[in-house]
Length: 165
Image (tube, rainbow, N blue to C red; front, side, top):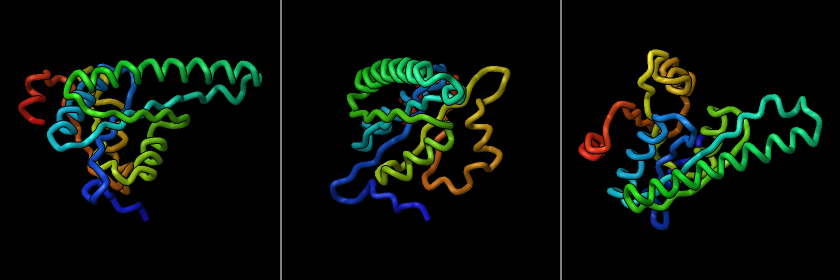
């Protein structure tokens, strides 16, 4: 059974979880989450997931190098996104770097942090659809997700998100 959310209890605050990746929709999710966090006295948790499926099959030194390079790239991305959230709304960010599948790591981070109250994702705007993560949600893959999911249309502008958030 999932842990009870604590975001409204004394000493806690609501956190918005955003998947930190290189997609354009990541910026839309971050923008929305930062605005909502600012308006509700919350914070943003940025999750970068290293997907290193081929690393275990490599020589030990090569696998370690692959992991180190992926971690450095993720940390650099988190630096940019943290600065962006600060610039958007002056909100605090927490940074989490994990290795594994995106879905598994999202679920693990939510389970470990009882202040995470909302997962914020943005839909892709391309012909290939809303994106694999949102498609998996639509198929009911995460029926047991312990927090609501906010889906931000990827084509919304900053001013349109400001009006909503």
